[in-house]
Amino acid sequence: MVVTGSTSTDDRRTGGDRAAGDGDGCAASLVSAPLSEAEAVALARVLAALADPVRLRLISIVSSVGEVCSCDLEGPLARSQPTVSHHTKVLVEAGILVGEKRGRWTWWRLAPGCLAEVRRALGG
Amino acid sequence: MVVTGSTSTDDRRTGGDRAAGDGDGCAASLVSAPLSEAEAVALARVLAALADPVRLRLISIVSSVGEVCSCDLEGPLARSQPTVSHHTKVLVEAGILVGEKRGRWTWWRLAPGCLAEVRRALGG
DNA sequence: GGCTGACATTGACAGCTGTCAATAGGAGAG
DNA sequence: CTCTCCTATTGACAGCTGTCAATGTCAGCC
Image 1 (cartoon, rainbow over the protein chains, first blue to last red):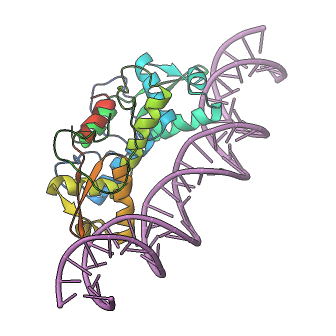
Image 2: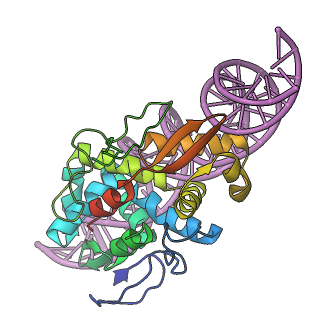
Image 3: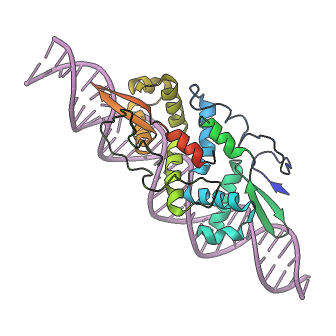
């Protein structure tokens, strides 16, 4: 079972560019023209999910390894198990992380294309 | 370094001190290898400054116009003058915005290269 | 000098956020 | 079924954040 934030589409490593979070936002670039209120709210939601040192390190760990289960995060992040679970949930709801339950473990990997979408919204 | 860094351009800024992500931080990419604690804190600080709808719209306005004074922000942002002043201060302390006092007005523009640095840290 | 206009600062308040202890849920092993 | 392990949820708490009214500060104009 794949646990995603919004739609539960089982995208098994499809290269499609999916928008983060709600899907509508993140389409406009920050530097081209003034953002609408809705665009700003949508982009701010993803950035807020990224704006935490623990979550940034979590993302970097997942990114470097490719796939990680929660028990492998608790140690490197130096946070309790509920706190790690909380951070993974925040990242999933922001569309940044994707979790898949296999047996008793939950394996986490990055949502493909999400960070690239954020970079593009920031003027890339 | 993600802050202004006093490049060769005459980006003089008067008033206020900024000490955001100085030092080593913001130099590593999120996706290449696990971030250190200091790198994560520094990057999170800049991202937290970006993670607000009002500030994102403020940045987009400044970016599209090139240079604006505070009185031109109060209306489009639909916020009171102290609130606008608060947001500009947060962005300056994060090294994203640069303010220059000319006469009675303060003119704001984007710190050159800062957003590009953030994009790069996000894996660009 | 006093006045006016443009920002900055302070104080207060509600709402959000990161953290952990305690607890619950659920899958595999025996 | 029971027991154990991994993960998710709940409850509580401290700290941070966005907002505005009130006030302060400083430069230019009379």
